[in-house]
View 1 (cartoon, rainbow, N blue to C red):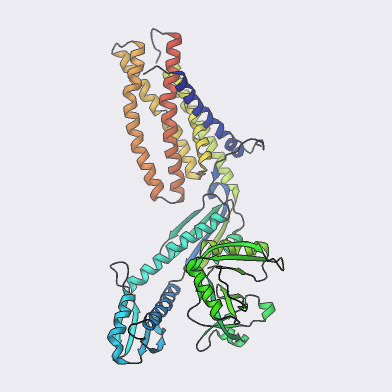
View 2 (view 1 turned 180 degrees about the horizontal axis):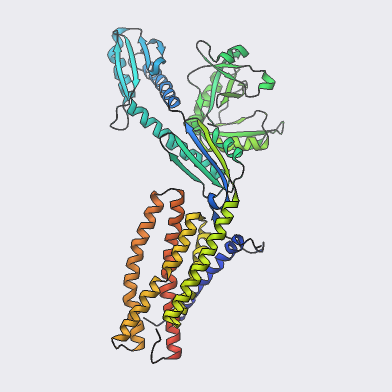
Length: 532
């Protein structure tokens, strides 16, 4: 057990030195020292509580989710009854007032066929009944959403919003943002290192709901202000200065939405050299876009983003390649932001900023300073205690402790992990617990010597027997750390990362590394007794 071939020594020393060297850029950064530009510089990312950054609290409106469900159900009912076999089922007097969808059948003889079509639409994916269906006065159907169904829809919308926000924040190039739900309709977004919350609000506050709809006619400024015309929808132009508050009237149902997009990138128009956004549809969206541009050649279609018309070009010829451009007085930055929003997908629900704040780096710098001081004092006290108690074996333990801290920092840097204030607490805890393995080994060696075993046999048995307890204890700690990371939020995850990585570095430096050093000394010195 105390035999170490050359390849094993090289491997152990190589891992230790590589981990220690990887920590140097982070140490230089944390101590405000310069690091040579020509050298690799993996550094630990600092969390919001250490580096400062932007904190935003977003809130969704439950009523908007309910209204969108009614609109989707209305379109679904119209399409289903239009395609009904053996012939179309005609309806009229459609209303979505009072939070329910109601419509009147033209022919009472179609009631059973209509009920069958609608019940297929009402069938949900789970055990919860999402809609209540009633037939009033023999011919009027009333579809009312249930509270349980609305709860499911709100939950699905918020989960979709979480995914979309995560994609958009990642596009900013930031590291380790914290994005989590708070309650039923709120989302907390924390982005370390981003000192401009307006940029974050601009990116996250837009729904990026893109639609292509057929234009019926122009809308006057009065109609735009009223926001309603019979038989259609009114949307204002985004460029209010050019169009002076006017807009367009579009078909209320139908059209193509942004869910069929597969790509969006900022480019430049080949003729005007102005910034535009080039978009690509999936096969289904490309087919529908080709059908619309072929059927309505010569007519206008409106490109609508977040309820504002970016442009309303005339379809001069069919577009069959599934690609198009969005133009609208963009700058390069605004076109790139729109491309990011479209690539990430539309938010399922509008999000309103209800709280925002910028966290300055001053508190974080003070925390780092105090944390480094705590680590320094703790490390020094542990070193003194180990050397006084175990002599030479204590020296090995203290050297292993220094390597453990550096390897922990280096591995976190190579993994791109984020260091938070709880993470610094995890560092201090790791230092205190790092020598536990050495204490177990040394005490076991003492017991073996008291039993009369020779030096070599005592050391060998000491490492062998203590290793079992060390590995068992660290397995349970590892499971706890993984669970903390899996189910914890930002600060808890920061602590869990340091805890889990620290387990590996502690065991590595305390057991195989110190055993190699002890074995080398024993073979060279051949002591007759141990001062331990």
